[in-house]
Image (cartoon, rainbow, N blue to C red; front, top):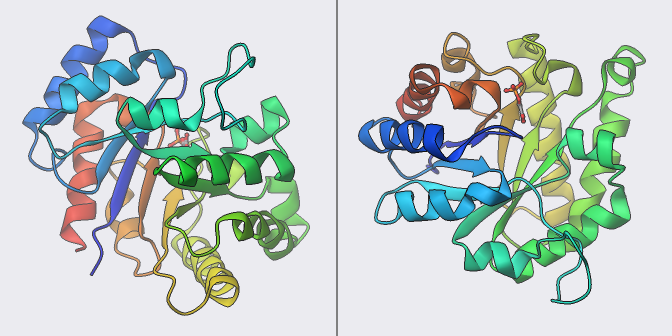
Length: 248
Ligand code: PEP
């Protein structure tokens, strides 16, 4: 059985000195410092993570990648091969905050997925519906449409993260039934498109905390967790990683 994957997403948080103590606590915690755990840090701190995680089991991840794969005149952009060069194993693509605040659309996300895979990283492709879409009964349509973007990297290694937009950073968690139903549907769609050989992990994200991690991560359809706020605090993150370990 594949290990459940826990990725912390620091979003736009962190400072060099504070990171040192948080990262050291992660390295010292056997529940956290193991295969299948990683941190997605802001670009300026990726080198710090890579240096501190060297020789450990923890993975370095980026929160975004440029749609432009080749070096050149793209001021402010960071391309996939630079991230791979920094030691990133995973990269988030299509996080709802990027879709919402930076207008990332299908065409752009296709290019980002392809660039990530071409550079040898594993993209973590984020999908999820807004509250309005869920209440209008449009969950399957919206998420089904977002999943079509994965055609750009069919047959390659990737991870999907299901993150209902209404549960991100709000403290509002989807119910266990909602999570299971959503994950079953995503797994079914991915298998339909990419064949029975696809062994895809679908992470759940949206206010995962120490006190709900056991229930969420014990679902067979949940391949791990994408953890925002709780990954900035060692005790809670350790407990989430422990829950993921228990369910192996
Ligand atoms: C996220 O940033 O992907 C996320 C799920 O955030 P939070 O855990 O804070 O809801």
